[in-house]
Image 1 (cartoon, helix red, strand yellow):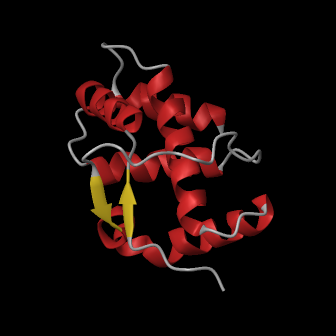
Image 2 (cartoon, rainbow, N blue to C red):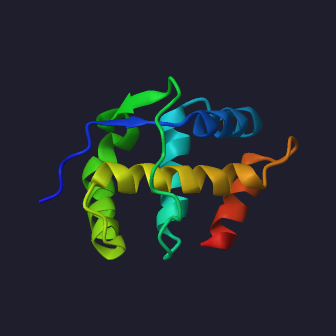
Length: 126
């Protein structure tokens, strides 16, 4: 059985990407943006290339804050992905997918991009 996730910590690069996403989209809550990033990465069938990601920023939230009312669903998705990717640690799976998703979301953002354009670009990649 895989261990539960108790908290989510973001790297400094991830924090910078979250700040950019907040600025461009106007979404103030990091947990919402992190959920989007996780979903974008999980939609990609390939495993993330980087799995050893430092939690070297001051952005940290509990699993409950991160996952909200859908904690059971996110946990099931991560467990399935851990199985598929051959990874024994759910925390590693979460960090790898979260950071890949943040890279995807923030990579193509422009100052004048609306939240609607962001959603369309996400849906177009899925």
